[in-house]
Length: 387
Image (cartoon, rainbow, N blue to C red; front, side, top):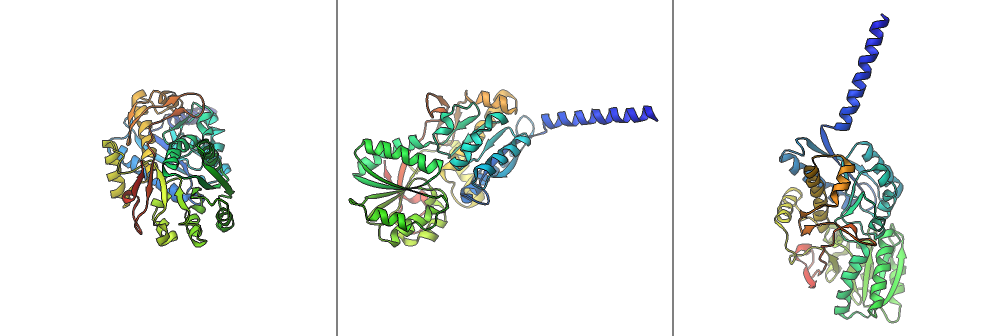
C-alpha cells in the first residue's frame, strides 16, 4: 500500500511538472490588450479591441504563428492608473507575448513603471506622453506620435494661418498637460500668444473656462482642445452656446470628431470645426494599409481611424518578429524588436534610438489638419486645409 501511495505521488508530481512546462511552452500564442472598456475613453477602447480582433482573425486564417493559433486576452483598465497596472499584471500572468491597445497616457505612465518587472513588450499606438519613451525602457516601443513631435508638426500650421493668439483648454492628465506644455513652448517661440486652462478629465461643465477665454484681451483666434474624456464633444458645443465659437476657431488635437457621436452632440455647429490627424486622402496607404482599411470597413461598417492603422502595425510587427526569431518568448521579442524593418500601413517602420523621447520610436508620421464643411460629413471627406 505504501509503495502504491509513493507511486501515486510520483506520477502526480510528474504530471504537475509536465503540465507546468506545457503552460510555459503554450499551444497558443497570446496577445494581451489593456485598454479602457467600461470607463475613461471607452469608445476608443472598443475600436482598439475591434482592431485587435481583426488582426487575430486574419493571422489565424493564414495558419497562425509558428504553427500555433493566436489568441487575444482582454483586460479593462477603466482609464484608471491603478486598474491599468492590475490589468497589465493579469496579462503577464496569462503569459502573453506582447501587450497592445494601451491608451490614456496617465494610465500608461503607471504601467511603464512595472513593465520591466513583467518583462513583456508594450506597444504604444496613440499614447502621446514624451516620458514613456524618454525613459528608454527596453520593453516600450511606440509606433504612434508623441506630444512634442505633434507640437512641432502643428505649429507651422498655426504660423501659416496667421494666428497671433490661441487658447488651449486641456485636461490635467499626462497627455493634456504634456501636450499643452509642448505646444505653448513652440508657439511662443514663433511669437504666438498662448492662454491655457486645465480642467479635470471628467469635467462636463466647461463654460466658466470658456467664458474666461472669451473675456481675454486680445480674444483668442483659435481654441485648441487637448482633451480625451468627457469634454471632447462638449467643448465645441458649449463654446458655440456662449458665442465664443465660431468667432474663435476650434481645433481638436486628435481624431475624435470622426466618431459618429460628434455630430449627435455638437449638431450643425460642428460645421467649421477643424482637427489634426495623421490620416487623409493625401496620405498614400501601402498595400497592407489598403487591405486593412477594406477589411476593417467591411467588418465594422465604418472606416478605421488612423490610430487603428498604428495599432494594427504594432501587432503585425510583433507577428513578424515572432516569425523572424522563431520564438514567442516576450523577452526575446523585446530584444529583437529594435531591428524591425517593416512595411507598415502608412510607411516603412524602423525604430530610432536617440536622446530624449526618440527611443524605440518610429518617426515617419505625417500630420494633416482637416475641416468639416458639411453637416454630418465623414472624416474621410473633410477638407484637408494643411498642408
